[in-house]
Length: 486
Image (cartoon, rainbow, N blue to C red; front, side, top):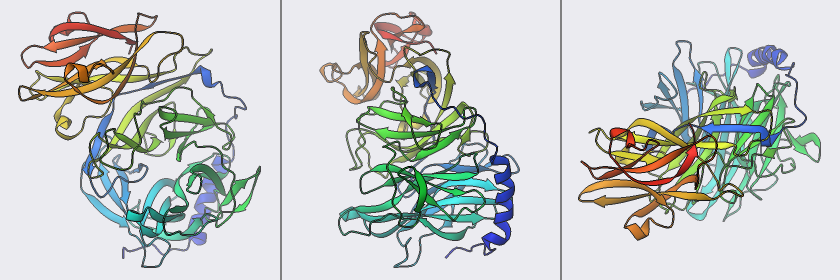
């Protein structure tokens, strides 16, 4: 059992949160309407910052900036661990356990996952996902949420109690309850929780006064009057549970892995309840198969992070963070991945709204390359970023000819060759398809650059370039199409 801070919340934390709440009670001018067609998003290259691990990286990423400018991040899988690093991009150091699961028969006897942290005066407030009565081989567990506080920057935690449970009870053959929540300051005097309801896989929302973080009420049929413990809740759609606050616009943002949608979906709300979806994915996704290993990769627990302080209160430039499992790999190969993201609201609707970086990476020998829109893992972690070639489209544009681009690989003469090709051509050319890279225009469009497939003759490996001379790194083989200018 880890040590805990036993200071009564109402004696210390209430005063601290009341002071913070006074600042939050004067929100910015909320926008009653959001022009979703006017939003422009550019997603930067993926960077693996931690992994692989078989026994952590099983929850949304959250972090705290410390007084010396370094960061304390949290990773969880049953237990919650603290990891320190100089930046949010450098988190491959050792971990220490800071929250454990409870005693047999308790509501968290299968574990406690820290999913959100928030500063509250001299304390840190934590939102903790709990599981009970689990048999994962049978697909069984019961989920709930608790609140905890820390007086030492997240090294020890005081459990303030369970605050959100579902209307159902543990069942022998399926997952029940409500959990996987992230917590957001709504800058209106309330904290909001966006949670997964396992009975129908919909998102629900609850809130509590910032001055009393253990008094949650669920949103039900237009009112916030159902108790957090066992109360009913209206579904607000499948918007995902990875939520944050875009302070420039006074919007809540949520991201969700949606295979029906074809990728990672961004949803925005001006009133914390009614969300609108961006029509284009932030990232392309081939599948979301949790039965690992699988042919496709897996993106899970996506959320948004402020790179300056680790919170989920962000400007228009923020980090997209998620857990990644590569194609063909199981959960022993979990990686933490960050992307830089830039969001802007333009004066008029955009023809194409989302661009996703196509990045060229260089091997340690400096003579071979991999060009990809996805994270490099395993042996490929040794590659370093060389250049951003273009921005790919994340879906096929309407009314314009496009090319679905795949990433494929083959071991040729004892070395790996990673190639970009039309999705239908990989196997025919002797390569194994790995993942969808994205889409290119078939013909030149305003604001685009060509994307050429090139061959480095010395190593007989392929790469991509936007220059017809392949930047002097190799010889041109073909024009693949046209991407958005980076």
